[in-house]
Length: 98
Image 1 (cartoon, rainbow, N blue to C red):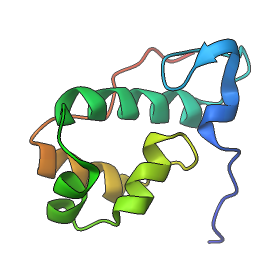
Image 2 (image 1 turned 45 degrees about the vertical axis):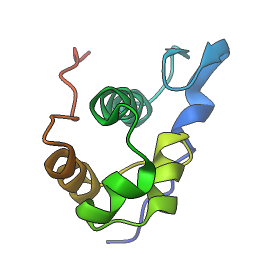
Image 3 (image 1 turned 180 degrees about the horizontal axis):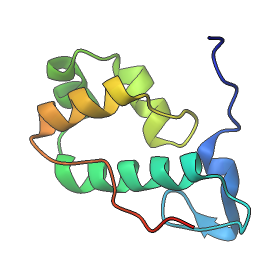
Image 4 (image 1 turned 180 degrees about the vertical axis):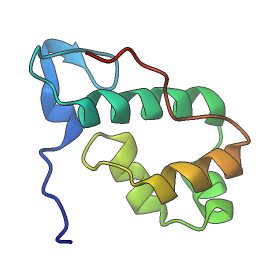
């Protein structure tokens, strides 16, 4: 299966909005909204911890983590799982569908 191409999640923030808080455009795809929710949960769980202090025990590159947090990339399931483990916190959101 070929890698999917995604517009950066932050591009779906409506004019005047703020990544990752929104508001999001009406046509924002689920991946953008979910990524924003993961980033918000990460920020709450990480508090004042540095990127390196979370990325290192998670086994991920701090630059990759930074790109996800800034809304440049969409995290994969592995990334969310190892971050949840490193932070001992749930990051994947519950969100209404439809």
